[in-house]
Length: 200
Image (cartoon, rainbow, N blue to C red):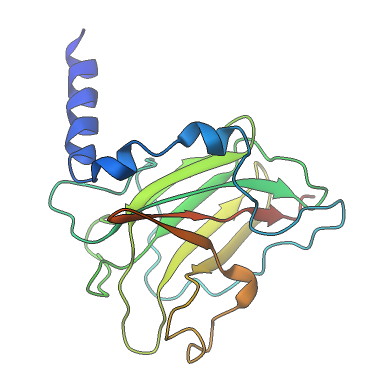
């Protein structure tokens, strides 16, 4: 095992040490097999995922990673999975997904890249993000920010919301079409959202 492999393995283990065993052992294979229900039914006339404003806290050049968990991060762990599809209901491999969010106190890291990262969908259009449940701050309900882009396609900027949040109805940006499917998993949560992009 070379030094680079050892370093990568050490980083992986440090990140996962912050995650309860219940989340670490979640059946990712179920999502891979397509057993989890999609966010909404997909058809050959699917509407694209609605856009939303980026807000003032987006930063370009986030690190490429599918886990935003780092040593010392606090909050309820959550694993968000899903697929990126075209409006013709075809998976979009190699789609870029850039996520950013506030911490569990409602604060964004504007100096660095804590709770920020991008990744690319696999050959079946799937993605998987490990992070924490974001906090709330005045005027906004709980949410994730996302930029999604098919290879050589235009950028979709949007936000994802949690069902059952008291602040949903009072948030002027909240859209029901952007609700994730969220479930408890012991002391953690799992969530699902499928993005639909208009290609061409």
